[in-house]
Length: 448
Image 1: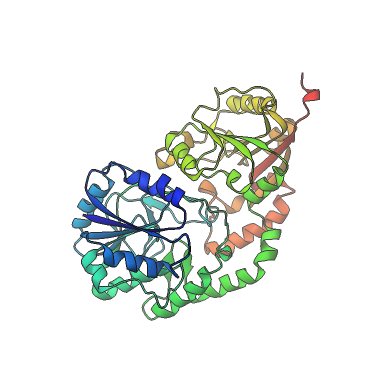
Image 2: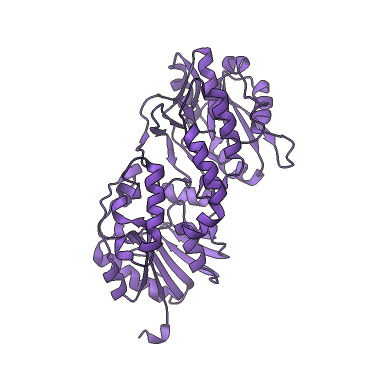
């Protein structure tokens, strides 16, 4: 039996996400929830140790309130896999190997702070994969192992790095950390785009490095590599962060600024991590055809209303919304379909239409089991300007980026900074940019 331990600070998220996904599981489990809405616990380690000691199952699963288990037999399947690993110390659903390779079994990722900079291939697992560290969103430990080694409350007296420390410490018992094939989803809204915005993270990464530096010169985590050099660079980043964010704003920031003053927005092909989550729009409608993306967005509560439909076939009344947006959508349609969609967007919008798309054709396959991810067309600055859009360039110089916008060259950290620097030029010369950000002001008086 698995004991499920969750410390929560939002009862609604707990109820709507984790607890809902635990309903109708095919095996018996123990549920231990720890209410931290009044900040009674000083750290994650303190809270989880308290819950873990109370657990009576063969395995103890420490899980975030916003994790969604992907199937009814999830716990049953997980137990079967766990029992097959002889040197199991701790298991999870997302981890980093000794060489920095990313492994995950999360059906959909939340916003990744390095989403536009991560070069490593992210691989879905088919069998247990040994990793150096695991993401703290979900950890499973044998209760007998947890009796011998608990989370380090003294050194990690906050809410970061306790899981990474546990994965490295477990090796002292001759055990290992594994990512297991157990599909799930992390349904979090994360509006940060740079590691410096996680104020406490750097402090605990320093403690992590000092504790384990004799055995690990490079510690690979989902929040970036921890090493002597990277810690120094992140300290520098944090120092210059306010200026850096102003000089090199993320696309979400551009979108928030562009939609300022809009009370209603239609988001076509909204996916599961729409920029509207940071825009503070009073009322928005998300349209999405792919069921997993739609359900994840619903669980996050990004939009006021949702419609599952093909954006090529849906209809709205003229001037139904202040703004209509299509973020990374046009390239998934044929050229004719895209042109027809833009025309409809102009009819539905009262104030403006906003689209983003790669600069020219960029090959992409049907990744993450979503056939709608395939790219079918490419759009140029000239074509968008011909449609009366004002076009800007994002994500820096086009030649620095490749598949899904990842930086092509090593070291990634350096070339990502170089890409940011080129952004100051490509923003005003979008023909050179990787991504196009196009805005059209609507004047219905000119439309027939």
